[in-house]
Amino acid sequence: MYDSSTTPKWISILSREEGLETAYTQNMTATLIASKNGTEIIHHRLARMGTMAIMPAAGWNELESLCLLTGSLRVTYGSETSILHPGDKLVAAPVHEHVCIVAIEDSEFLYVSSAPVFQSYQGLVNGFHELAVKISLKDGYTASHCERIRRYSLMIGCELNLNATDLLSLSCGALFHDIGKIRIPDEILMKPGKLTPEEFDIIKQHTIFGRDIMDSPENPFLNIGSKVAEQHHERYDGSGYPYGLKRDDIYLPAAIVAVVDSYDAMISNRPYQPARKKADAVREIASLSGKLYDPCVVDAFLKVVDTFAGED
Ligand SMILES: [Fe+2]
Image (cartoon, rainbow, N blue to C red; front, side):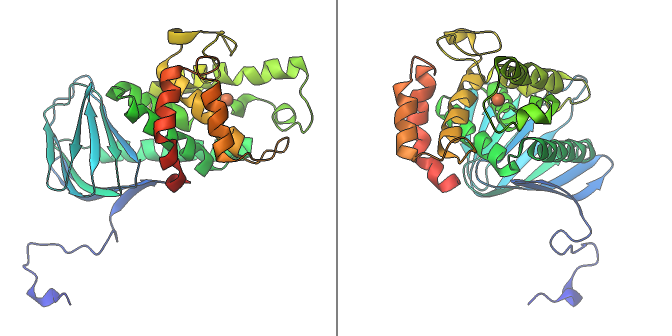
């Protein structure tokens, strides 16, 4: 039992997160433990496949450091990836390239910055949360559906060893790939029967609307994922939309979301189609490799799809 009477006077004992500022999403909790003269110490909890980004910024010349307490992290700095174990540290002063941190298992780490970051971080996290709720209200999808697409996509992106910029684009773009649907009229989006060709043309616009929303200066935290929203319905053989892009002209993170989104649609109950068995859906995706889907994405999908089971 802890005895507070023996506490040295210069230490503040803070019980869990009581009285501390906290920012959280479905898979991340960040708590500002202490700050003075601009320096901040932030405690992070990341659930498995939770992601954190560190971005370089013009004029930023501060120290950033991370020390892993528990779990393991996959850290991609530029195009180099390393695995961090408890006790491992990262130090950058300043960060020059994008850093993408993915939790391989539930992890906790301390993050120290020599200039304040927590407040803008909190704003960003709240912005993410509000948008996720807005999409789920509009589209009838739950936030967990969007998060599942993000996790599956990220597993494929890690398997393909994408660089940090593409991984961050993938994570953000997969989570908000259908954000453009908030501009599609409800009577078309929710229409129970078959869509007319004109109505389908309007639905197709969600890719362009999505790109515009994510590119907007009002949503700087979404900019990195805009190309994924724009291209996630493009197909390898050119039969997709909005542009009919083919093969390598399709942005790879968008080609990944195309596979995962199709797979998820196949195994989900929809008003117009009952859920299919996972094995059938996997077979169908494999059979469309090189036709609708990028073969290298399908190969990576087939390698990691068995691990999706524990993620549902
Ligand atoms: Fe879509």
